[in-house]
Image (cartoon, rainbow, N blue to C red):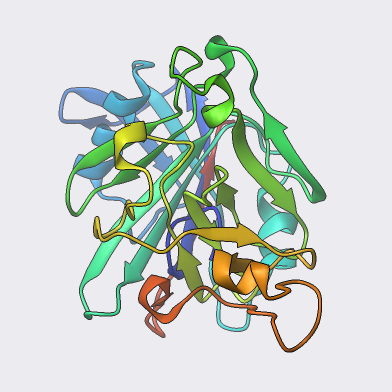
Length: 252
């Protein structure tokens, strides 16, 4: 799945509002309007610390329901300004992780990248709450200044997607995700999954928007049917558990 991390079920989208909290969590003001099964007080406070913006107010604008697809996510989450997206994902070994991303811009559905040529614009980040870590956009002082350029990809028929890797990608059915670190985190860790830190194979986006490994791309991924690979390689795929909920919290 996209946006909300690696391969999993899109759980929650939370709109973000600064300095308006009415509840306290770990000494940081955090108020979650609408509730979230994935976000308790301690986790909400951690999001606030990673954001570094003081007290925050979160509003649950999207929670995954059975049968939802990417257009349903966009209908609820688009145009809400800055958001946190949380995903509960299970890797091929059967271990479950809580991961997600912070998007400082509104989600949209136009089939375009949100590009950030200046460092002051590169404020998005990905995170893993199960194996605590945060992965911020790569800045322009890296040997390849454009590596952190692409913040998010916005398409009606895709779930949330962060970075060119894709660093975190959710599919159309919101039941699978891929993570291949490239635009976020330490460039020396390129190719690792932010979910379980395993290394994925190189991949590329096909002409039809599918995510393909490079061998598939050379064989015609996105072109002829024989060479096309509409899914990531088996080792890179993850499946959401049937009961997974997705929550998106946005700034209000």
